[in-house]
Structures are given as C-alpha cells and as structure tokens.
Length: 483
Image 1 (tube, rainbow, N blue to C red):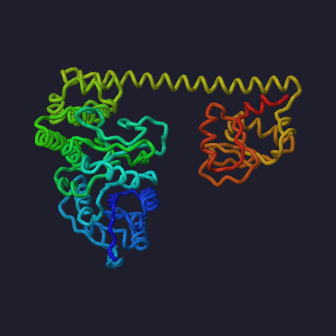
Image 2: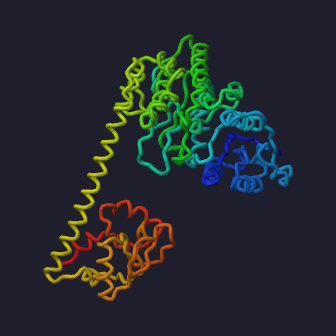
Image 3: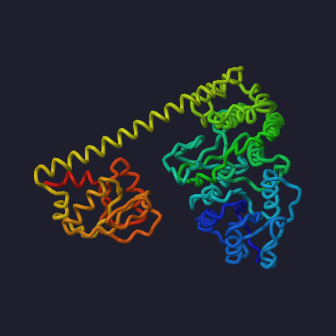
C-alpha cells in the first residue's frame, strides 16, 4: 500500500559528512510519525568521505521513506546500489546553479503536502513537524509558509538576528510587520503545491532559495511563525549566509529584480519588507568588507551593489538588525559617497589590541593573587595538601602545567597523593614529572581535577564536563578551604 506523506524533507548534501547524520536523525525522531508521514529525499553530489555510505545506509533502513539521489557526473560508485538509489544527470552547471538544480530535482520526487529544504548540518527540534502541520491545518488557506527561530549549536546564548521569540504561534502580516523578515530557507516549511508554482530557475544562482521563500510569502502577504518551543538548529560552519565569496554578488541584481517584480505583481508596489530585506542583505555584504583590503572592498561592493543601494531608503539601512550600529551608519554614509570602512577597521584593530592587553594583565593579576595566598599559607606553616585531609580525593589530575601547576604537582606528590597526569594544550613542549595530556587525548579516570589556570576556569570546566565525571575544582577554592 502506497504511503501518504504529510511532510517531504529535501536534504542538500555537499561536503557535510561531519554533520549529515545529525540532520537525518532530527527528521527520523520527529514526534510526527516518520515511517507513516515523513518522506526524506537526500540529494548528494558525491563530494567524498562517508557521505555516500551514510545516505545508502538510511535508504536501506527505510526504503519506502527515503529517496537518495546523486549527481552521476561526479561519481559512478553508486551504480552497485541497484534500484534503491537513483542517478541524476546534471550537466553544464556551476556551483551556485547546482544548488538550485539539486533542490528542483528533489522536488520531482516529493510526495508530501508540505516541503522543507534542509541543508546538511541543520536540524529541527523533535516537535517541529507536528507543530507545523497542526498550525497549517488551523490556518487553512491563509498561509503558504511557516518559519521558526534558529539557534547556533556551538553558541546557544548568542543572539541570532531576526529571531522573533514568540510565546505562541502567530500569523505575521508582512505589510504591518515589515521587519519580520525571513533569512534562512532551512527554517521554513512550505505548502508543496505553492512551491511547485515558484520553483527557482537554475540560473538564479546563490539567491534561488531566498527568491523561492519570498515569492511564496508575497502571494498571501502573510506567513506563520512558530512559537519558541520549536527551534531550527544549525552548526556554525553550516549556517546560511548571503555572502560567501566576492563573485556571489553576480546574482544580486537577479535577487533584487525578482523580489521587486513579484512584490509589484502581487501588491502593486514594492513592499517595505522587500526594502528592509535588501538593506539587511547589503548590510551583511558591506560588514564583511570592513576587515579586507581596499582592492577587495572595491571588488565586492561596486556596480550592482552600488546601484541597488541607491534604491534603498536610508531608514531601512539604519534599522538593519543583522549589523551593528556603526556599520549601519557607515553603510548609509557610503550610499552618499563617504567611505569610512578603513577608519572603522583601524579603530577595531586598536580595540582588539587593548582587549588582548587587558586580558593579559588580568590573567597575570589573578595568577599573582593565587601565588600570594599560597605564600601566606606557607608563612603560617600550612600546606595545600591539607585540603585533601578532609576529602576523599586520592587520584588527581592537574589542569594547567605552567609554573603554578608544577608547584602544585610537587607538593601533592610530596604529600603522597597520586597525581596521575597533567592537562595542558602545550603538552608537547612541557617537561614535567608526570605525563602531560591534551583535551584531545584519552583522559584516565581520576577523583578530581584541580585547575591552576584560574583565569579560564569556567571554559575549562565546560570543556571537561563531557570528558570526565569527577569534580573540577579551581586551586583558588582549594586555598580558601584550608582552615
């Protein structure tokens, strides 16, 4: 019996072996039943590594749910996979149009009512599809697209531009809330019927996904926003960006013209949201030229960039959420013929130098404070080893094997305690009485880790929490605990 899929997920794979299984598993384990309601279409380019084996594995595990497509211009190794894997011939395409071609090819096999284009390295919270489908069904024909807030896995607390942090699902009217723009296609789920009508042409290059989602939204002038209980996750190195390399702006005019034409077609004018969105795109491109040479600046921001910039009102440039306030003002000044990027770059270099100097002196001050307290204990005839008279720690590791760490190891060993090893990122250059390892090495079990690099204690404790199950203690706490 042929399955009726509710959601089709099209995963685009290119050099993403490291995170591919994370993306696939976030789909497999959805609260919306995978085997009954979710179709997974993996479109790869045979870019090497284990990507092909990973894709093949899940195709064999879920033959009725998984479609695996590969571009046979790169490799014919999949010929042995038989009928379970489909070969797709894509010729005369470059890197950018290849992405659109893969997306469009995946759509030919999509059988779900709703579509999500997911780049490998991106993931969904496990309730995402169930919540999205319920929201679509509640809204009827009012919306064609639903989006969700995003988080970077490596920096959960980092502020992500354009997150809306809704306490409940909400329909966004783009005429009233023009700054509620969509910036990541992976975080959008769309009606399949509408997507088929607006599939991006391959020549639209690196902006094809953005054109697709905005054409979908402009049709209704509304879209759905899921509450913050639903999250789209992304690894930092896999996040979508509007500016990957200088020649990406070759498609900038196509993006701008496509958005303006669709806005005029559907609404009779260029909506504020389109102006604001383009201000954010130009702002991100402009911001990334602050710290490059003058020649690179001219290569990245000229011609098409300047022409479009002149058509964006200053107010939207000064509101762009994804760039800092200094760059917003610099972008507005650049529009009017004043380029202050080099001045900003020099100021930031000086700020960085100041920060590095401050960090060095603050670290030195903390270390000297530890040495002072330790010296005062010695004057009173007390030893650091006395701390262990009141604890059950017998087997110890020391993190930070500079002078402070070496002193600690010597005293603990004199007391008869078993200091199994030290940990230091410079392990290969340190001569010590005990083995010195790095975080990348296998760390033997111990009762406690004493950290002598007190300035970095919080970061060190975080890095050790998944490696060892024992307590991680600062040497400051040891000193202060000695009666």
